[in-house]
Length: 261
Image 1 (cartoon, one colour):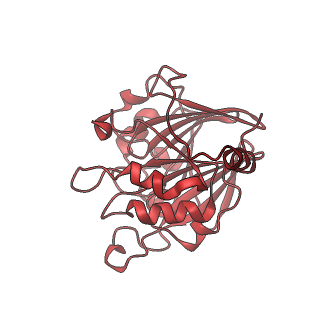
Image 2: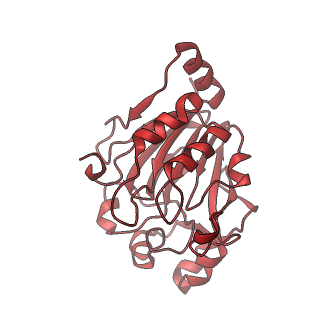
């Protein structure tokens, strides 16, 4: 059966439960989780911090791949790479150069596009906030991602960086990128799977992140990008408690278990 936001919320409500689920080890690498969509199976692999590999019926998608390219050696080469913005924990030109194949397409925000070398730029297209594009039948919407707290505005200024919504038939995925809660986030509809950042001072705390999730009520949400500037980790238990029955909260191994030590 295809998981949808509507199906999950109805089931959870009838069961009267709040689900806080870890990734299940149903794949060898990085503890993958799989979801059935109307187009086939979607498998999610957390890599590190904000880096994700998604195996989809339309191809293999890497999101903000950074770090040692060896982390990706167990996965197929990417058909698509999504880049949200230019910060070093999201954009690493050397890693990209090591990962791309002849077939690889990059979709970036305009600021990252301007920073690509000629080889990568030839594979890339840029989408700005509010733009829409398509890849192998996946509709990709660029969602505004920026700080709203005045003293944090210099980290992610309005209009520069992207989040993304990927629509695969009847299944919709939200990737927050680096953001606080925005009107665009609160206005999201019918999100089946969400990845939401929470780290201070660069993005937002767990309270604000939970507020945003409660507003758009995805079926499943993964906290990611939750290592703070001081190297501590955001309180995921508190986040899950605050989200309550608005979404199923699942935990991925983004930091080699260090966040659960």
